[in-house]
Image (tube, rainbow, N blue to C red; front, side, top):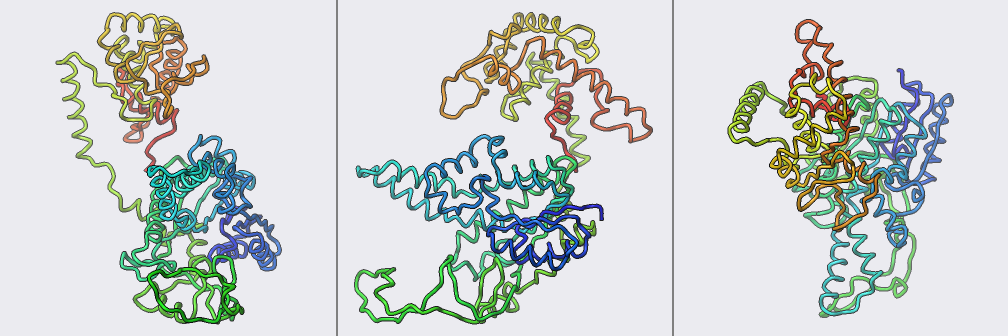
Length: 558
Protein backbone atom coordinates (compact mmCIF):
# COMPACT_ATOMS: atom_id res chain seq x y z
CA UNK A 1 0.00 0.00 0.00
CA UNK A 2 1.70 3.21 -1.18
CA UNK A 3 -0.74 5.68 0.41
CA UNK A 4 0.47 6.98 3.75
CA UNK A 5 -1.95 9.76 4.68
CA UNK A 6 -5.73 9.46 4.95
CA UNK A 7 -8.43 12.04 5.65
CA UNK A 8 -11.77 10.59 6.76
CA UNK A 9 -14.48 13.23 6.62
CA UNK A 10 -17.20 12.32 9.09
CA UNK A 11 -14.73 9.93 10.72
CA UNK A 12 -16.48 9.97 14.08
CA UNK A 13 -19.77 8.78 12.60
CA UNK A 14 -21.15 5.27 12.44
CA UNK A 15 -19.65 4.39 9.03
CA UNK A 16 -16.77 6.86 9.11
CA UNK A 17 -15.33 5.44 12.29
CA UNK A 18 -15.40 1.87 11.00
CA UNK A 19 -13.59 2.95 7.83
CA UNK A 20 -11.01 4.92 9.82
CA UNK A 21 -10.53 1.91 12.10
CA UNK A 22 -9.97 -0.44 9.17
CA UNK A 23 -7.57 2.00 7.53
CA UNK A 24 -5.54 2.37 10.73
CA UNK A 25 -5.52 -1.37 11.46
CA UNK A 26 -5.13 -2.85 7.97
CA UNK A 27 -3.46 -0.38 5.58
CA UNK A 28 -0.32 0.59 7.57
CA UNK A 29 -0.87 4.35 7.21
CA UNK A 30 1.47 7.00 8.53
CA UNK A 31 -1.35 9.34 9.52
CA UNK A 32 -5.15 9.21 9.74
CA UNK A 33 -7.07 12.47 10.13
CA UNK A 34 -10.65 12.11 11.36
CA UNK A 35 -13.11 15.00 11.16
CA UNK A 36 -16.62 15.41 12.46
CA UNK A 37 -19.03 18.15 13.43
CA UNK A 38 -18.67 18.02 17.21
CA UNK A 39 -15.52 18.20 19.33
CA UNK A 40 -16.48 15.55 21.88
CA UNK A 41 -17.25 12.90 19.26
CA UNK A 42 -13.95 13.61 17.47
CA UNK A 43 -12.02 13.31 20.74
CA UNK A 44 -13.72 9.99 21.54
CA UNK A 45 -13.14 8.56 18.04
CA UNK A 46 -9.48 9.66 18.02
CA UNK A 47 -8.89 8.09 21.44
CA UNK A 48 -10.42 4.79 20.31
CA UNK A 49 -8.30 4.78 17.14
CA UNK A 50 -5.12 5.48 19.10
CA UNK A 51 -5.84 2.49 21.32
CA UNK A 52 -6.58 0.29 18.28
CA UNK A 53 -3.51 1.40 16.27
CA UNK A 54 -0.87 2.80 18.64
CA UNK A 55 1.76 3.08 15.88
CA UNK A 56 -0.34 5.39 13.71
CA UNK A 57 -0.52 9.16 14.05
CA UNK A 58 -4.18 10.02 14.67
CA UNK A 59 -5.28 13.63 14.19
CA UNK A 60 -8.72 14.95 15.13
CA UNK A 61 -10.42 17.95 13.52
CA UNK A 62 -13.89 19.20 14.38
CA UNK A 63 -16.32 21.70 12.92
CA UNK A 64 -18.58 22.35 9.93
CA UNK A 65 -16.82 21.72 6.59
CA UNK A 66 -19.55 23.47 4.55
CA UNK A 67 -18.67 26.98 5.73
CA UNK A 68 -15.63 29.24 5.83
CA UNK A 69 -12.90 28.46 8.38
CA UNK A 70 -13.88 31.41 10.59
CA UNK A 71 -17.40 29.93 10.98
CA UNK A 72 -16.53 26.26 11.36
CA UNK A 73 -17.35 26.16 15.08
CA UNK A 74 -20.62 28.09 14.81
CA UNK A 75 -24.02 26.48 14.24
CA UNK A 76 -26.13 27.30 11.20
CA UNK A 77 -28.97 28.84 13.28
CA UNK A 78 -26.37 31.09 14.92
CA UNK A 79 -24.99 32.16 11.52
CA UNK A 80 -28.47 32.79 10.13
CA UNK A 81 -29.39 34.95 13.13
CA UNK A 82 -26.27 37.13 12.72
CA UNK A 83 -26.78 39.63 9.83
CA UNK A 84 -23.06 40.08 9.19
CA UNK A 85 -22.36 36.35 9.25
CA UNK A 86 -25.41 35.62 7.12
CA UNK A 87 -24.22 37.99 4.41
CA UNK A 88 -20.77 36.42 4.58
CA UNK A 89 -22.34 33.00 4.01
CA UNK A 90 -24.22 34.54 1.07
CA UNK A 91 -20.93 35.74 -0.44
CA UNK A 92 -19.31 32.34 0.06
CA UNK A 93 -22.22 30.67 -1.72
CA UNK A 94 -22.91 33.09 -4.58
CA UNK A 95 -19.89 35.40 -4.68
CA UNK A 96 -16.57 34.91 -6.52
CA UNK A 97 -15.40 31.30 -6.33
CA UNK A 98 -11.74 32.22 -5.77
CA UNK A 99 -12.60 34.18 -2.61
CA UNK A 100 -14.88 31.40 -1.32
CA UNK A 101 -12.16 28.83 -1.96
CA UNK A 102 -9.56 30.76 0.02
CA UNK A 103 -11.92 31.00 3.00
CA UNK A 104 -13.30 27.44 2.85
CA UNK A 105 -12.84 25.16 5.87
CA UNK A 106 -12.98 22.10 3.63
CA UNK A 107 -10.24 23.42 1.35
CA UNK A 108 -8.16 24.48 4.35
CA UNK A 109 -8.33 20.97 5.84
CA UNK A 110 -7.36 19.25 2.59
CA UNK A 111 -4.53 21.66 1.78
CA UNK A 112 -3.09 21.59 5.31
CA UNK A 113 -3.08 17.79 5.61
CA UNK A 114 -2.53 16.98 1.88
CA UNK A 115 -3.92 13.44 2.18
CA UNK A 116 -3.16 10.71 -0.35
CA UNK A 117 -6.72 9.42 0.08
CA UNK A 118 -9.89 11.19 1.19
CA UNK A 119 -12.84 9.09 2.34
CA UNK A 120 -15.94 11.25 2.66
CA UNK A 121 -18.66 9.76 4.85
CA UNK A 122 -20.40 13.06 5.63
CA UNK A 123 -24.11 12.85 4.88
CA UNK A 124 -23.82 15.70 2.39
CA UNK A 125 -27.31 15.32 0.95
CA UNK A 126 -28.87 15.54 4.42
CA UNK A 127 -26.74 18.52 5.47
CA UNK A 128 -27.71 20.45 2.35
CA UNK A 129 -31.34 19.43 1.87
CA UNK A 130 -32.58 19.50 5.47
CA UNK A 131 -32.47 23.30 5.83
CA UNK A 132 -36.27 23.61 5.53
CA UNK A 133 -36.59 25.51 2.27
CA UNK A 134 -40.38 25.19 2.42
CA UNK A 135 -40.63 26.93 5.79
CA UNK A 136 -38.25 29.69 4.69
CA UNK A 137 -40.34 30.21 1.53
CA UNK A 138 -43.58 30.50 3.49
CA UNK A 139 -42.08 33.09 5.83
CA UNK A 140 -40.62 35.15 2.97
CA UNK A 141 -43.93 34.98 1.07
CA UNK A 142 -45.81 36.27 4.11
CA UNK A 143 -43.47 39.27 4.20
CA UNK A 144 -44.11 39.96 0.52
CA UNK A 145 -47.88 39.67 0.95
CA UNK A 146 -47.80 42.02 3.93
CA UNK A 147 -45.68 44.54 2.04
CA UNK A 148 -47.99 44.43 -0.97
CA UNK A 149 -50.94 44.82 1.36
CA UNK A 150 -49.58 48.11 2.62
CA UNK A 151 -48.27 46.91 5.98
CA UNK A 152 -45.05 48.30 7.45
CA UNK A 153 -42.31 45.65 7.28
CA UNK A 154 -39.01 46.01 9.07
CA UNK A 155 -36.36 46.05 6.31
CA UNK A 156 -33.81 44.11 8.38
CA UNK A 157 -36.33 41.39 9.23
CA UNK A 158 -37.40 41.06 5.60
CA UNK A 159 -33.76 40.95 4.46
CA UNK A 160 -33.13 38.19 7.01
CA UNK A 161 -36.04 36.12 5.70
CA UNK A 162 -35.14 36.61 2.02
CA UNK A 163 -31.46 35.81 2.59
CA UNK A 164 -32.31 32.71 4.62
CA UNK A 165 -34.62 31.58 1.82
CA UNK A 166 -31.87 31.97 -0.78
CA UNK A 167 -29.34 30.23 1.46
CA UNK A 168 -31.69 27.25 1.89
CA UNK A 169 -31.77 26.39 -1.84
CA UNK A 170 -29.92 23.10 -2.31
CA UNK A 171 -28.33 23.17 -5.75
CA UNK A 172 -26.09 26.25 -5.37
CA UNK A 173 -24.76 24.79 -2.12
CA UNK A 174 -24.03 21.41 -3.68
CA UNK A 175 -22.39 22.89 -6.77
CA UNK A 176 -20.14 25.18 -4.76
CA UNK A 177 -19.25 22.36 -2.35
CA UNK A 178 -18.16 20.03 -5.15
CA UNK A 179 -16.31 22.81 -7.01
CA UNK A 180 -14.28 23.71 -3.91
CA UNK A 181 -13.73 20.03 -3.08
CA UNK A 182 -12.37 19.19 -6.53
CA UNK A 183 -10.09 22.21 -6.65
CA UNK A 184 -8.62 21.41 -3.23
CA UNK A 185 -8.08 17.73 -4.07
CA UNK A 186 -6.23 18.63 -7.27
CA UNK A 187 -4.08 21.24 -5.53
CA UNK A 188 -3.24 18.82 -2.71
CA UNK A 189 -2.31 16.04 -5.16
CA UNK A 190 -4.78 13.60 -3.61
CA UNK A 191 -4.77 10.23 -5.41
CA UNK A 192 -8.24 8.92 -4.49
CA UNK A 193 -11.51 10.44 -3.34
CA UNK A 194 -14.05 7.89 -2.11
CA UNK A 195 -17.55 9.04 -1.23
CA UNK A 196 -19.99 7.09 0.89
CA UNK A 197 -23.22 8.53 -0.50
CA UNK A 198 -26.92 7.98 0.00
CA UNK A 199 -29.98 7.04 -2.02
CA UNK A 200 -32.02 9.32 0.23
CA UNK A 201 -34.84 6.84 0.81
CA UNK A 202 -33.02 3.82 2.15
CA UNK A 203 -33.46 2.03 -1.14
CA UNK A 204 -37.23 2.45 -1.23
CA UNK A 205 -39.27 4.24 -3.90
CA UNK A 206 -41.65 7.18 -4.02
CA UNK A 207 -44.05 5.15 -1.90
CA UNK A 208 -41.60 5.05 1.02
CA UNK A 209 -43.53 4.86 4.30
CA UNK A 210 -40.63 6.26 6.41
CA UNK A 211 -39.65 9.93 6.74
CA UNK A 212 -37.84 12.01 9.34
CA UNK A 213 -41.12 12.52 11.25
CA UNK A 214 -42.80 14.68 8.57
CA UNK A 215 -45.88 13.48 6.66
CA UNK A 216 -45.85 11.85 3.23
CA UNK A 217 -45.12 12.83 0.53
CA UNK A 218 -42.10 14.41 2.18
CA UNK A 219 -40.59 17.27 0.18
CA UNK A 220 -37.60 17.19 2.52
CA UNK A 221 -36.94 13.51 1.94
CA UNK A 222 -37.35 13.73 -1.83
CA UNK A 223 -35.05 16.76 -1.86
CA UNK A 224 -32.51 14.66 0.01
CA UNK A 225 -32.79 11.92 -2.63
CA UNK A 226 -32.53 14.48 -5.43
CA UNK A 227 -29.45 16.08 -3.88
CA UNK A 228 -27.92 12.64 -3.26
CA UNK A 229 -28.16 11.70 -6.91
CA UNK A 230 -27.23 15.18 -8.12
CA UNK A 231 -24.13 14.74 -5.99
CA UNK A 232 -23.42 11.46 -7.76
CA UNK A 233 -23.80 13.24 -11.10
CA UNK A 234 -21.24 15.87 -10.12
CA UNK A 235 -18.86 13.17 -8.89
CA UNK A 236 -19.34 11.46 -12.26
CA UNK A 237 -18.11 14.68 -13.87
CA UNK A 238 -15.22 14.91 -11.39
CA UNK A 239 -14.15 11.43 -12.44
CA UNK A 240 -14.00 12.65 -16.05
CA UNK A 241 -11.88 15.70 -15.26
CA UNK A 242 -8.13 15.43 -15.73
CA UNK A 243 -5.95 12.70 -14.27
CA UNK A 244 -6.41 13.03 -10.49
CA UNK A 245 -8.00 12.28 -8.19
CA UNK A 246 -9.57 8.92 -8.95
CA UNK A 247 -13.21 9.30 -7.90
CA UNK A 248 -15.39 6.51 -6.51
CA UNK A 249 -18.70 6.31 -4.67
CA UNK A 250 -20.25 3.57 -2.58
CA UNK A 251 -23.97 4.30 -2.16
CA UNK A 252 -25.79 2.28 0.54
CA UNK A 253 -29.50 1.93 -0.25
CA UNK A 254 -30.77 0.47 2.99
CA UNK A 255 -30.74 1.35 6.69
CA UNK A 256 -27.23 1.36 8.17
CA UNK A 257 -27.10 -0.06 11.67
CA UNK A 258 -26.31 -0.26 14.38
CA UNK A 259 -24.02 1.56 16.87
CA UNK A 260 -25.42 0.59 20.26
CA UNK A 261 -28.39 -0.77 22.25
CA UNK A 262 -29.00 0.95 25.59
CA UNK A 263 -31.52 2.25 28.09
CA UNK A 264 -31.02 5.95 27.40
CA UNK A 265 -32.42 9.40 27.96
CA UNK A 266 -34.32 10.52 24.86
CA UNK A 267 -33.03 13.64 23.14
CA UNK A 268 -34.72 15.44 20.24
CA UNK A 269 -33.20 18.44 18.44
CA UNK A 270 -30.46 18.61 21.04
CA UNK A 271 -32.83 18.79 24.01
CA UNK A 272 -33.91 16.08 26.48
CA UNK A 273 -37.52 14.97 26.16
CA UNK A 274 -39.47 15.21 29.40
CA UNK A 275 -42.58 13.37 30.57
CA UNK A 276 -45.48 15.64 31.54
CA UNK A 277 -48.76 14.73 33.16
CA UNK A 278 -51.45 14.72 30.43
CA UNK A 279 -54.51 16.91 30.93
CA UNK A 280 -57.93 16.96 29.35
CA UNK A 281 -59.40 19.90 27.45
CA UNK A 282 -62.63 20.33 25.46
CA UNK A 283 -62.23 20.79 21.71
CA UNK A 284 -63.27 24.21 20.43
CA UNK A 285 -63.02 26.11 17.13
CA UNK A 286 -59.34 26.90 17.76
CA UNK A 287 -56.69 24.41 18.78
CA UNK A 288 -53.37 25.53 20.25
CA UNK A 289 -50.52 23.52 18.81
CA UNK A 290 -48.17 24.48 21.63
CA UNK A 291 -48.77 25.35 25.28
CA UNK A 292 -46.36 26.51 27.94
CA UNK A 293 -44.60 23.46 29.44
CA UNK A 294 -44.77 25.18 32.81
CA UNK A 295 -48.55 24.80 32.79
CA UNK A 296 -48.13 21.03 32.98
CA UNK A 297 -47.10 18.84 35.89
CA UNK A 298 -43.54 17.63 35.38
CA UNK A 299 -41.24 17.06 33.69
CA UNK A 300 -39.32 13.96 34.56
CA UNK A 301 -36.67 12.45 32.33
CA UNK A 302 -37.87 10.11 29.58
CA UNK A 303 -35.63 7.04 29.34
CA UNK A 304 -36.32 4.06 27.05
CA UNK A 305 -34.53 1.03 25.61
CA UNK A 306 -33.38 2.22 22.15
CA UNK A 307 -31.21 1.21 19.20
CA UNK A 308 -28.70 3.89 18.17
CA UNK A 309 -28.16 3.83 14.38
CA UNK A 310 -25.76 6.78 14.28
CA UNK A 311 -26.63 9.46 11.73
CA UNK A 312 -29.88 7.64 10.89
CA UNK A 313 -31.25 8.32 14.34
CA UNK A 314 -32.29 6.58 17.54
CA UNK A 315 -35.12 4.06 17.22
CA UNK A 316 -37.30 2.26 19.70
CA UNK A 317 -37.79 -1.49 19.42
CA UNK A 318 -41.03 -0.98 17.50
CA UNK A 319 -39.56 1.54 15.04
CA UNK A 320 -36.44 -0.56 14.44
CA UNK A 321 -38.50 -3.71 14.00
CA UNK A 322 -40.74 -2.01 11.41
CA UNK A 323 -38.06 -0.27 9.37
CA UNK A 324 -35.77 -3.32 9.14
CA UNK A 325 -38.53 -5.84 8.43
CA UNK A 326 -38.35 -7.88 5.24
CA UNK A 327 -39.70 -5.78 2.38
CA UNK A 328 -39.03 -2.49 4.19
CA UNK A 329 -35.63 -0.73 4.29
CA UNK A 330 -33.97 -3.79 5.81
CA UNK A 331 -30.35 -3.21 6.93
CA UNK A 332 -26.63 -3.32 6.20
CA UNK A 333 -23.91 -3.00 8.83
CA UNK A 334 -21.24 -0.26 8.92
CA UNK A 335 -18.58 -2.98 9.00
CA UNK A 336 -19.76 -4.31 5.63
CA UNK A 337 -19.58 -0.82 4.14
CA UNK A 338 -16.11 -0.32 5.61
CA UNK A 339 -14.98 -3.64 4.09
CA UNK A 340 -16.13 -2.52 0.63
CA UNK A 341 -14.44 0.85 1.01
CA UNK A 342 -11.12 -0.67 2.07
CA UNK A 343 -11.17 -2.96 -0.96
CA UNK A 344 -11.94 -0.05 -3.28
CA UNK A 345 -9.07 1.94 -1.74
CA UNK A 346 -6.79 -1.04 -2.40
CA UNK A 347 -7.88 -1.06 -6.04
CA UNK A 348 -10.16 -4.08 -5.98
CA UNK A 349 -13.25 -4.13 -8.16
CA UNK A 350 -16.08 -4.76 -5.73
CA UNK A 351 -18.81 -4.06 -8.28
CA UNK A 352 -20.25 -1.48 -5.86
CA UNK A 353 -18.61 1.67 -7.22
CA UNK A 354 -21.52 3.77 -8.51
CA UNK A 355 -19.25 5.97 -10.65
CA UNK A 356 -17.82 2.93 -12.43
CA UNK A 357 -21.36 1.62 -12.95
CA UNK A 358 -22.38 4.91 -14.57
CA UNK A 359 -19.29 4.82 -16.76
CA UNK A 360 -20.29 1.36 -17.94
CA UNK A 361 -23.89 2.40 -18.58
CA UNK A 362 -23.81 5.80 -20.26
CA UNK A 363 -23.90 6.01 -24.05
CA UNK A 364 -20.78 7.47 -25.62
CA UNK A 365 -19.79 8.65 -29.11
CA UNK A 366 -20.65 6.43 -32.08
CA UNK A 367 -19.02 5.60 -35.40
CA UNK A 368 -22.17 6.59 -37.29
CA UNK A 369 -22.19 10.04 -35.69
CA UNK A 370 -18.55 10.51 -36.71
CA UNK A 371 -19.38 9.77 -40.33
CA UNK A 372 -22.39 12.12 -40.28
CA UNK A 373 -20.29 14.85 -38.68
CA UNK A 374 -18.13 14.98 -41.79
CA UNK A 375 -21.26 15.24 -43.93
CA UNK A 376 -22.61 18.11 -41.81
CA UNK A 377 -19.32 20.00 -42.05
CA UNK A 378 -19.27 19.65 -45.83
CA UNK A 379 -22.84 20.96 -46.15
CA UNK A 380 -22.32 24.00 -43.92
CA UNK A 381 -19.07 24.89 -45.67
CA UNK A 382 -20.86 24.73 -49.02
CA UNK A 383 -23.53 27.08 -47.66
CA UNK A 384 -20.85 29.49 -46.45
CA UNK A 385 -19.34 29.52 -49.91
CA UNK A 386 -22.63 30.04 -51.74
CA UNK A 387 -23.91 32.78 -49.39
CA UNK A 388 -20.65 34.61 -48.76
CA UNK A 389 -21.15 34.42 -44.99
CA UNK A 390 -19.14 33.06 -42.08
CA UNK A 391 -20.59 30.38 -39.81
CA UNK A 392 -18.22 30.93 -36.89
CA UNK A 393 -19.82 31.64 -33.49
CA UNK A 394 -23.05 33.18 -32.18
CA UNK A 395 -21.90 33.58 -28.59
CA UNK A 396 -24.56 31.16 -27.38
CA UNK A 397 -22.07 28.36 -26.67
CA UNK A 398 -19.70 29.13 -23.84
CA UNK A 399 -17.42 29.84 -22.20
CA UNK A 400 -17.02 33.39 -23.59
CA UNK A 401 -13.48 32.52 -24.68
CA UNK A 402 -14.93 30.06 -27.19
CA UNK A 403 -16.53 32.70 -29.44
CA UNK A 404 -13.48 34.95 -29.16
CA UNK A 405 -11.11 32.13 -30.14
CA UNK A 406 -13.27 30.97 -33.04
CA UNK A 407 -13.57 34.45 -34.53
CA UNK A 408 -9.88 35.20 -34.12
CA UNK A 409 -9.02 31.87 -35.76
CA UNK A 410 -11.40 32.75 -38.60
CA UNK A 411 -9.65 36.09 -39.16
CA UNK A 412 -6.31 34.30 -39.31
CA UNK A 413 -7.75 31.78 -41.75
CA UNK A 414 -9.11 34.51 -44.01
CA UNK A 415 -5.83 36.42 -44.18
CA UNK A 416 -3.22 33.63 -44.07
CA UNK A 417 -5.03 30.32 -44.66
CA UNK A 418 -2.40 28.13 -43.03
CA UNK A 419 -0.51 27.85 -39.77
CA UNK A 420 2.78 28.21 -41.61
CA UNK A 421 1.47 31.40 -43.19
CA UNK A 422 0.78 32.90 -39.78
CA UNK A 423 4.22 31.91 -38.52
CA UNK A 424 5.95 33.43 -41.56
CA UNK A 425 5.25 37.03 -40.48
CA UNK A 426 5.65 39.01 -37.25
CA UNK A 427 2.82 39.88 -34.88
CA UNK A 428 2.83 43.57 -35.78
CA UNK A 429 2.25 42.67 -39.43
CA UNK A 430 -0.70 40.47 -38.47
CA UNK A 431 -2.22 43.37 -36.49
CA UNK A 432 -1.96 45.65 -39.57
CA UNK A 433 -3.46 43.01 -41.86
CA UNK A 434 -6.38 42.48 -39.51
CA UNK A 435 -7.15 46.18 -39.41
CA UNK A 436 -7.13 46.29 -43.21
CA UNK A 437 -9.37 43.19 -43.41
CA UNK A 438 -12.05 44.61 -41.10
CA UNK A 439 -11.86 48.06 -42.71
CA UNK A 440 -12.53 46.47 -46.09
CA UNK A 441 -15.00 43.83 -44.86
CA UNK A 442 -17.38 45.99 -42.86
CA UNK A 443 -20.03 43.26 -43.11
CA UNK A 444 -17.70 40.90 -41.27
CA UNK A 445 -17.01 43.41 -38.51
CA UNK A 446 -20.71 44.24 -38.23
CA UNK A 447 -21.59 40.55 -37.86
CA UNK A 448 -19.10 40.04 -35.04
CA UNK A 449 -20.07 43.13 -33.07
CA UNK A 450 -23.82 42.66 -33.55
CA UNK A 451 -23.50 39.34 -31.75
CA UNK A 452 -22.27 41.13 -28.64
CA UNK A 453 -18.59 40.41 -29.30
CA UNK A 454 -16.69 43.72 -29.33
CA UNK A 455 -13.50 44.10 -31.34
CA UNK A 456 -10.57 45.74 -29.54
CA UNK A 457 -8.54 47.57 -32.17
CA UNK A 458 -4.78 47.32 -32.50
CA UNK A 459 -4.21 50.61 -30.66
CA UNK A 460 -5.75 49.07 -27.51
CA UNK A 461 -7.90 52.13 -26.87
CA UNK A 462 -10.58 51.88 -29.56
CA UNK A 463 -13.49 49.47 -29.42
CA UNK A 464 -15.70 48.42 -32.32
CA UNK A 465 -19.03 47.37 -30.87
CA UNK A 466 -22.74 46.79 -31.39
CA UNK A 467 -25.73 47.64 -29.18
CA UNK A 468 -24.79 45.23 -26.37
CA UNK A 469 -21.70 43.52 -24.95
CA UNK A 470 -21.54 39.95 -23.64
CA UNK A 471 -18.36 40.74 -21.71
CA UNK A 472 -18.15 42.14 -19.06
CA UNK A 473 -21.20 40.42 -17.64
CA UNK A 474 -22.20 42.16 -14.40
CA UNK A 475 -25.82 41.49 -13.37
CA UNK A 476 -27.88 44.60 -12.78
CA UNK A 477 -25.28 47.02 -14.16
CA UNK A 478 -25.66 49.05 -17.36
CA UNK A 479 -22.33 50.90 -17.09
CA UNK A 480 -19.01 49.98 -15.50
CA UNK A 481 -15.57 51.48 -15.03
CA UNK A 482 -13.04 50.50 -17.69
CA UNK A 483 -9.38 50.69 -16.68
CA UNK A 484 -6.44 49.37 -18.71
CA UNK A 485 -6.38 46.27 -16.49
CA UNK A 486 -10.10 45.78 -17.09
CA UNK A 487 -9.59 46.01 -20.86
CA UNK A 488 -6.88 43.36 -20.74
CA UNK A 489 -9.02 41.03 -18.61
CA UNK A 490 -12.12 41.44 -20.76
CA UNK A 491 -10.16 41.08 -23.99
CA UNK A 492 -8.72 37.78 -22.74
CA UNK A 493 -12.18 36.63 -21.68
CA UNK A 494 -14.36 37.42 -24.65
CA UNK A 495 -13.31 40.31 -26.91
CA UNK A 496 -11.89 39.81 -30.37
CA UNK A 497 -8.44 41.29 -29.80
CA UNK A 498 -6.55 42.82 -32.75
CA UNK A 499 -3.50 43.89 -30.72
CA UNK A 500 -0.09 42.60 -31.74
CA UNK A 501 0.48 40.89 -28.38
CA UNK A 502 -2.62 38.75 -28.90
CA UNK A 503 -1.42 37.64 -32.33
CA UNK A 504 1.95 36.82 -30.77
CA UNK A 505 0.07 34.53 -28.38
CA UNK A 506 -1.61 32.86 -31.36
CA UNK A 507 1.79 32.32 -32.98
CA UNK A 508 3.03 30.66 -29.79
CA UNK A 509 -0.02 28.39 -29.88
CA UNK A 510 0.63 27.45 -33.49
CA UNK A 511 4.26 26.60 -32.69
CA UNK A 512 3.07 24.33 -29.88
CA UNK A 513 0.56 22.73 -32.25
CA UNK A 514 3.31 22.09 -34.80
CA UNK A 515 5.52 20.56 -32.11
CA UNK A 516 2.74 18.19 -31.07
CA UNK A 517 2.54 16.76 -34.58
CA UNK A 518 5.72 14.79 -33.93
CA UNK A 519 3.59 11.97 -32.55
CA UNK A 520 2.35 11.25 -36.07
CA UNK A 521 5.55 9.29 -36.71
CA UNK A 522 4.38 6.50 -34.40
CA UNK A 523 3.18 3.46 -36.34
CA UNK A 524 -0.46 2.51 -36.83
CA UNK A 525 -3.26 4.08 -34.82
CA UNK A 526 -0.82 5.22 -32.12
CA UNK A 527 0.07 8.15 -34.36
CA UNK A 528 -3.47 9.52 -34.38
CA UNK A 529 -4.43 11.54 -31.32
CA UNK A 530 -6.20 14.90 -30.96
CA UNK A 531 -2.89 16.72 -30.62
CA UNK A 532 -1.41 15.10 -33.73
CA UNK A 533 -4.42 15.41 -36.02
CA UNK A 534 -4.12 19.13 -36.78
CA UNK A 535 -3.14 19.86 -40.35
CA UNK A 536 -1.42 22.95 -41.70
CA UNK A 537 -4.68 24.45 -42.98
CA UNK A 538 -6.41 26.51 -40.28
CA UNK A 539 -9.60 24.67 -39.33
CA UNK A 540 -11.11 26.99 -36.77
CA UNK A 541 -13.02 24.36 -34.75
CA UNK A 542 -10.07 21.99 -34.48
CA UNK A 543 -7.68 24.81 -33.60
CA UNK A 544 -10.01 26.14 -30.91
CA UNK A 545 -10.57 22.64 -29.52
CA UNK A 546 -6.78 22.35 -29.14
CA UNK A 547 -6.69 25.62 -27.20
CA UNK A 548 -9.58 24.54 -24.96
CA UNK A 549 -7.83 21.27 -24.19
CA UNK A 550 -4.31 22.57 -23.68
CA UNK A 551 -4.91 26.03 -22.18
CA UNK A 552 -8.38 26.00 -20.62
CA UNK A 553 -7.84 22.42 -19.44
CA UNK A 554 -11.06 20.85 -20.67
CA UNK A 555 -10.92 17.57 -22.55
CA UNK A 556 -12.80 14.30 -22.70
CA UNK A 557 -10.89 11.64 -20.78
CA UNK A 558 -13.34 8.73 -21.05
